[in-house]
Amino acid sequence: MTLRIAPSVLSADFANLATDVAKIEDVGDLIHIDVMDGHFVPNLAFGPQVVAALRPLTKLPLEVHLMVDKPENFVDEFIKAGADTILVHAESTPHLYRVIQLIKEAGVKAGVVVNPGTPIESVSPILHLVDEVLVMTVNPGFGGQKFLPDMLRKVTHVAQLRDTTANADYTIEVDGGVNADTIGDCANAGADTFVAGSFVFDNADPAGQVRRLRGLIE
Ligand SMILES: O=C(CO)[C@H](O)[C@H](O)COP(=O)(O)O
Ligand SMILES: [Co+2]
Image (tube, rainbow, N blue to C red):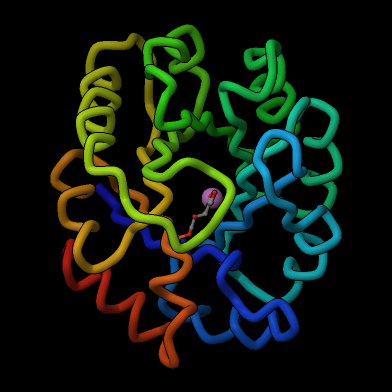
């Protein structure tokens, strides 16, 4: 299984995003971009313009984590902006199946995200459709929060469901509080893709931090 580190630019220097992205270009596997609408989560962050601005600056895939109500109203804009993967929260729309279809029909990878309080069973009807399942390991909305260790059981459950669900073929990502102390447990539980924001960018050597995380799981 390929293990991937996804630096989250939520913790980057917003006045120097291009510089910060360049710092992790050779060591990261993809770039995680958090989108927040002030409704679904109590914070605001990034729109499609930022995705479009980053697109020509990096060869890394751009993964857009939509923390917005009614994501069906926004997926087109993010696809046009150059997103390679769009991650939609199960809790954010009554039309989850349709949104996943829309994303896939556009030729973009689709993922489903579950909040800490959401059981994975709630997304079992769409598990055969998605390219990625993202298990939130903090309550969404802010970087720099403490990892919730009880989410490790959910990660293992998501891995088991991949074995038992017909046609399921997804990567398993964790987001929130991933650092040198927690990444090993996430990998052991079955995660293969690791978002890290503050651990990477709240440091003078973001590339060194990514290498450090990789060294702990490979
Ligand atoms: O989705 C997110 C917050 O809702 C971020 O991707 C996540 O919090 C990354 O930050 P950190 O690694 O500092 O926890
Ligand atoms: Co995120």
